[in-house]
Image (cartoon, rainbow, N blue to C red; front, side):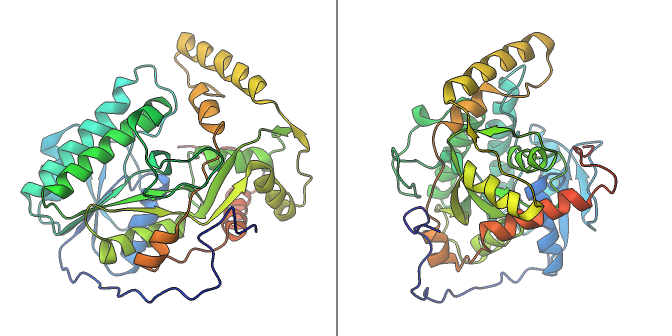
Amino acid sequence: MDAALNPQDTSQPRPSVRRVRIAIDRPVLVTGASGFLGWHVAKLLEERGYSVRALVRPGSRIAELNAETIHGDLRDRHSLERAVEGCGLVFHVAADYRLWAKDPNEIYRSNVDGTRNLLEVARAAAIERMVYTSTVGCIGIPHEGIGDEDTPVTLEDMTGHYKRSKFQAEQLVLQFAREGFPVVIVNPTAPVGDHDVKPTPTGQTILDFLNGKIPAFIDTGLNIVDARDVAEGHLLACESGRAGERYILGSENLTLAQILQILARIAGRKAPVVRLPWTVAYCAGVCSTAWADVTGRPPRVPIEGVRMARKKMWVSCAKARRELGFDPFSAEAALRRAAEWFTGAWRTTLRAPAA
């Protein structure tokens, strides 16, 4: 892989990082454990011997976990008070991850107001440590360059309501950190892997390819990482991260064409060779989103997703490697595990799983 695209890769040994397990005999609260990334965080915490408490909305299911469940909502302060009671650590992974909503205010109420509620409740409960899951979308990306935690970025750089809401939530977290609350921010890139049930946009790309539904591609780029590695990064941030700092959790920068070529090798299929002009994708997004606004059903091609794809989301994970000892598997290994899970999850035919 070209080192210019993956500046976090180095042949030089990384300095050893002192990992201090936070001795705690109290439960650990995980929000979003019914979702893809939150599930992996909760699963890893259980494997490490922590007692996990999961905040979930009524009706949500958490498969294959032994977590204590608290029904509630980030917008319901009383339910958050019940959730954090007696806990020592909080991993705030939950988010409204939609690139389209009939009422965009719902995204801000969950991602911004909900994060503020949880920060206030956690601070009042004297939580020992909190890890907030942001997104690589809040990282500044220079034109045709590689972004990192120090790349200048503003709210005006954010494309769409999801990114804007996460950026505003990040600013809240940083404010609380400046005021002395022990909270660390992690910025995952594009995680892939097992238990991507809904699935995520990147998981949907993998599923679509396996179903033979990607005849062409656009010129965009992502940083692919294994969801298990991202979960590990959350724990490392809790144990070794500095309060008020951001840590990008990713692995390798790849173009979409490279991702599809890797999947082709894994699945024994042919990769698409037709490159779709961005203007065509943009028109499809406009039409699909306009129809969604009429029907109230999510668009197949959300315009915000198309706008995001115009910029290659390539970043450096050097800070997480250096300060946390973060050491993810390769993107190919992550894609292989995701493809194997999607293939093996259903014995008859590939399809999107039921939520």
